[in-house]
Image (tube, rainbow, N blue to C red; front, side):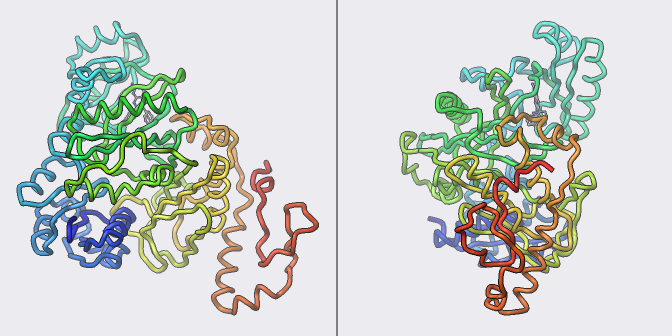
Length: 510
Ligand code: MV4
């Protein structure tokens, strides 16, 4: 196993990887920009190196600086996390050329998946179902002919794209030409590549993705799916595993296809195969993400597999120690992405100092966080602060635990989207598993008045009193007017001044 690993990332994912390193007896090397000098990953790592100014292109995206730190620190391997250089084939190649193991797939796999048209050509050869359309870039005449053939509505997409950039829905033939020009120039501007191809438009799709893992000896497994339909402007907000619409049979079919995708790409390490699922539950290959994903914890909780440990082992040349038959999905996990943004002001970014932080824990709760009290959230990077993950035997149990934990969560000094999750988790469509990629926009269009906002405030006041006095004094100070709300007269008086929030009360329509 590696003795020392460099983590080319920041925030919660760097902390997550440092934790795996410590568990495995691997020394961790952090890197940081000017504004991250006091960040949590720097404090938790065994070593930390300054790599430049806040601007990502001069620090976390600067391959030369990262490789320079690898040399100076004596690291043997580099974990890229997600974002930044994680899907950059040139960086993966530069690592290998400099003698460092890149913890991820080969540059060739990354290049294949980086071009959507190349990926579609390979998937066609491998017999993987993908959304009907073209496997090559198109000129306008060919696009017009093909669109007639497959039928409107269609979608134009940038071959170098992903994440919604350079994408245009076309409802009718007369709109095709201008949509084509727009997609092409946006693709050129965003990716420096104007190749555009065409797909049949899938109406109200769900976004379901399959986690796969492959070692460097030809073994590959799938580790269950994640439902990622709760998103806003192509930014995921909440993910869960298993998906409410995937049953055992669909999981096996989707999983076997995902493994076929991995084999066709000669894939190594952790990867995610994305599918669009239509209203008839047909699924189509969309793209492959060649990295560890933000939402990997929900898969860890339902499989019991530590994906970051596995990444290190596979990168060190070990064989997968289990087979597909050994993988069992148990329980249900849901992740909330806590962002520094204001849900009451169009999700406007809200950087600044965290003046007070009260974090939830307790049964079935996992928190992967990059923040601490007193830390200043920089404006320069992705606003993801933390991930709160609820686990339970059933989906309803996971929801109830998350709701409980969300009422314990208090972040002072900045705005966060925590209140949005309380709203989502109480929504009847969400609770019924009626999800598609339009779910969140529909929810946000409904009128809503959160009149339970006093609970976080109460928690903050309570914690402040707790910090200033002895716990015993509070706990023995009588019921303080609080009553048990579970309806049982035999229940003892609550041990604190907080009212117990019952499921019925939490869900009551007001
Ligand atoms: C689609 C689609 C409908 N039909 N392709 C958006 C991001 C990109 N990676 C793929 N996307 C979509 N492709 C066809 N042929 C609808 C979307 C889409 C979407 C996909 C996944 C998650 C959220 C989404 C939100 C809006 C649209």
